[in-house]
Length: 196
Image 1 (tube, rainbow, N blue to C red):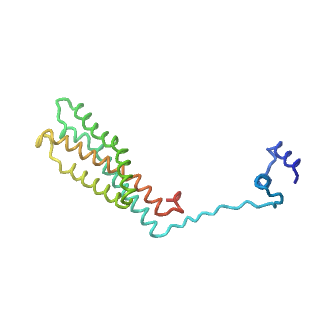
Image 2: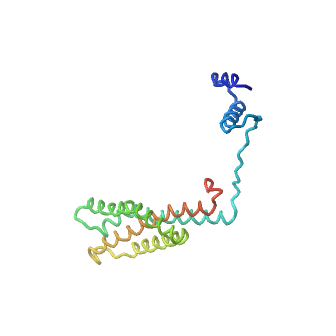
Image 3: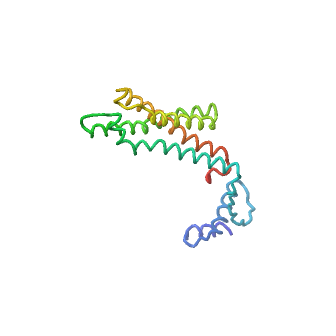
């Protein structure tokens, strides 16, 4: 195949077949680097090793379960927000109480990026596994605190303030847990990052 044949092939792109395209790419690449003799090469199939070892399966399973439980703790507040409205944000207007309750719900989402920044830095310094454990413990403490928190009738203004504090802790924990989990799993199996 000479230069005039290659020119004709480029002029009629619709008639090019995959083998001819590979042949042309090889010719152009070798011409650029200075090779003048070349041979026709066959396209090679990509082979991916998708076999996951038992240790890697354990990492994926535990990370997934931890993330699932944290998101459960984080979103369960939305289901109980109507109950929290009357207990922690009493008002003569129930609509105002519900708005206040959902405002606390939104605060958890607002601080998530801050948790990601904070715990990503800690993960770089101390290790991802420690960060995952720390975020799960923080989420557990915040959820337990919200569960045993006295109502507005018992401790007054401290009830919504503590509810806000626990919600901020939950937001920081979930914001740090998700990116740390993704990085930990991908670092655990660098050759299979796309499959984990």
